[in-house]
Amino acid sequence: IITMRLAAALVLMAGSAAAFAPAQQAGARQMALASTLEYEAIIGSGSSISADDFNAKLAANRETMSAKDKTSKSLGKDDLKVVHEDEHIVVIDKPAGVLSTPGKDGNPSLQQAVFDAFGCESGNANKMACHRLGMDTSGLMVFAKTNHALRDLNSQFRTRKVTRKYEALVKGHVSDDSGVIDVPLMMDYENPPYMCVSTEEKQRALIGLSADDVGKKVLENPKESITEYEVLAREEVDGEQVSRLSLTSVTGRTHQLNVHCSAIGHPIVGDSVYGDADSGKAMCVHAKSLSFRHPGTREQVNLESAAPF
Image (cartoon, rainbow, N blue to C red; front, side):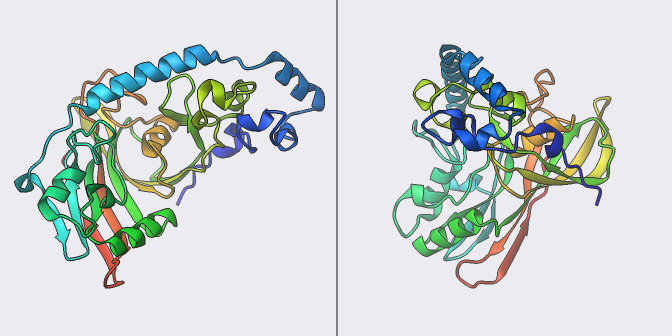
């Protein structure tokens, strides 16, 4: 496999920008800078980011996201494409355009549809979903029907024992037949609460901000993020070059596949946030396969679903 390692040149290999605060671990982060004088100069100049601008962008984007969430399709039992079902779990092939979970606004969701159709031991719909897919992502989701299954599957996801493979169409022809994208992610302070590749420049820009100004999320340590890819085909769609990729999300970060594909210059087709804003197409990413240990039988479960594009 040809390995693509982008991290070395891009990433500040230290803690979060919050670590510069005098009350926190300033010394550890200072070591990443060229000198004490440089460190003191950056601290003295403060952040280049306006907390007011950040919060205004965050509020505007959240309003846009909330409006989109309200368009989530409502599903009945007959609408559910059941891939596997037993006394412990149910696996559904989620259609695009449906939220995985209802969120605080109680929007229509796959979780509620699964609960209405199958129920669960706890009698609580919120104790069924073990993971999530984005609203625009189609594909396989596993739901727990028992408390034991929920605990077991949550543990498997948390310890990366679950293998998730996605199929996506990305813009352009990817040159290498396979590779690894290994770059950490952070919240994009220029377009919150979306994500971006964490770089030294972006981390330094946060110096001087506090959680009281912008919240804790944007000041968190960069998150290790690893995606493996394989080119399945190089195609043309509507006269434009695209590549069909198999993507393995090793770390499962928020919007990881979107950011990583964009980072190598091949954004996902239809991804209006991370690089294909003008196409007007539906986003082409599908959770194609799911492999995990069955919480009841302890046997390995391997499930697949065909991409709709």
